[in-house]
Length: 134
Figure 1 (cartoon, helix red, strand yellow):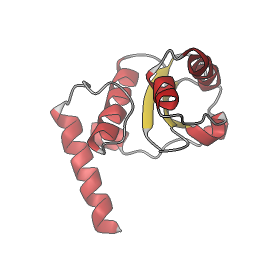
Figure 2 (cartoon, one colour):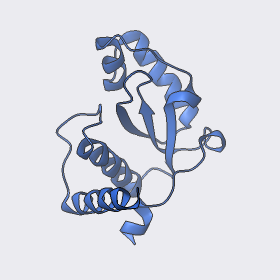
Figure 3 (cartoon, one colour):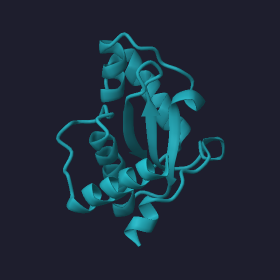
Figure 4 (cartoon, one colour):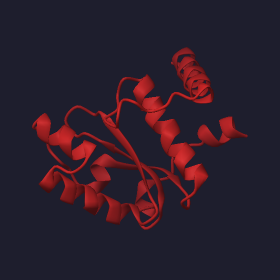
């Protein structure tokens, strides 16, 4: 069940800005990823990231400012990964996607994210499967 849940396709972003859940921000210049969650709407959370960019208050903002990278509109850099309500499942999904980007050496979040064995197994299996179908 967990494997099936984690391998679902992401939701289209245009229909999800008014929802809560797990999201990903991509740096417009180098395409590194930041994964987060929100119990409010994705649009409000993105607005908070814009404020953070102005005042250098988050990992994503710090990455952009330290590297002199630009910020782009919501639809260009925000991707809704899962629409869901707050709770343990949202926490787990966020940790999984942070781990996945860490495994791909592509994440902006804190580097000391836990490495649950189940995540390692799923990411390795999904990465291997993707390589064999290319």
